[in-house]
Length: 94
Length: 425
Image (tube, rainbow over all chains, first blue to last red; front, side):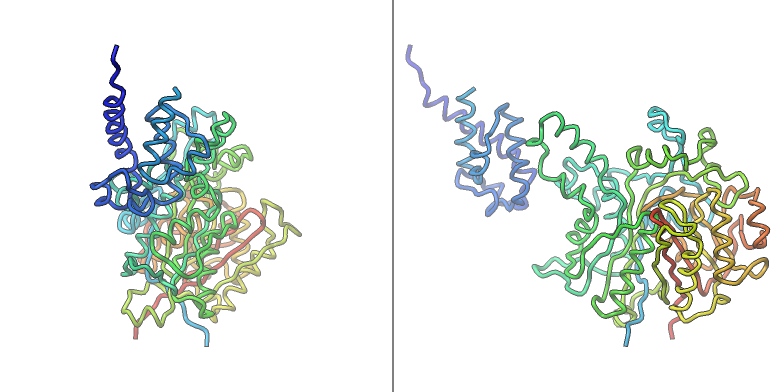
């Protein structure tokens, strides 16, 4: 059997990104930046999310993807690419 | 030279009216905000009636963003912010949007307990080992200064931002603290006021003390009976009242409408000595508070046209009247008019002083004395001290020049303010 993991992962990544976008939209104070969300988007600098709300983003992510994000991962979940990486890793661990 | 201090804006969230216009209409016509609460019945409270403000989601959305309302569960902050922002707008002030706060404006906005429902929610999660899932807003909604922190952020205030707390004296105290700060020149404008949460977790302790009435569960509107012979305890209430307290100079410079001048006032305590305890007032201290307020105001007791009393509808009402008689050296037909808003809204606890001051200043502005409900059977101990004609039971058109407002609270604490109608030159 020939697996095609690469393609699946890509699809997952865009699906994860779209779900993440819905979550951060609730906390973003810059709706324009939200419009142009990319993997390099920073939660605080670009989306103007209040730093206190980052824990709420993490809790919403945990709920949406049914995963648990440890304190160390939580600390570095400051931008879209880190979030995608952490979510992907945690999903794999499941 | 000390600054003269005036009130230029007001806001109110009361059980019988939200916003100045509906509230004015309610106090003119004597509309009660007391209703039966099925939740209190379910929880087997002795007193199952209460006064709580009615707020629609559409109204709330004018004051709070969707994000702010996520996991929001603090009725006191809700009421306080609405009253405060209304007062700010009523004073003709705008909200500073630039990066710099308004250094000359602050807030002293009190509460008794903040966000008790939010606290309950958090405690259940904590005990269920879910502390990490509390989210980010437990502290801001449950800290004692939650209400002043919310208001300070909404309005961009850069002067003192603080919450006072002195039980049922809180609201009246906040106005006097604002007055002192402006008088001494430390601020130009202070958003003063107070708020109180709604619900069983605020009221249960009072219910357990048997200080609330249990005789009117079937007839809520007749439950709150200040000065009545059949008064059998207070009816719990909630809400918020807010004031823009401002230097006269600033008010005149920007052509603001002036509700009243704060001539002076006094805060004191009976020290829980003599007749005073945690829950009962020291009569000597109450009289001293009133007398000192009058002295500080540079008026004589005979100039007072209306007293807005504390008068909660317990057996202590006649004691309060006696204290006023002694302090003012006025009685019988010579006693000023007196009323208690609590007959309409119940006892709004930490919000009582501020909600009642809004009512008092509206009466001053519109030249009428609001009716006292539910005292058709006046307490004979009261009518032996003052004439029944001084306790209007129907709206009475009357020009009020000077009014005295007093509030008393657990801890044997007292506050009295003297307001004077401002006549522009």
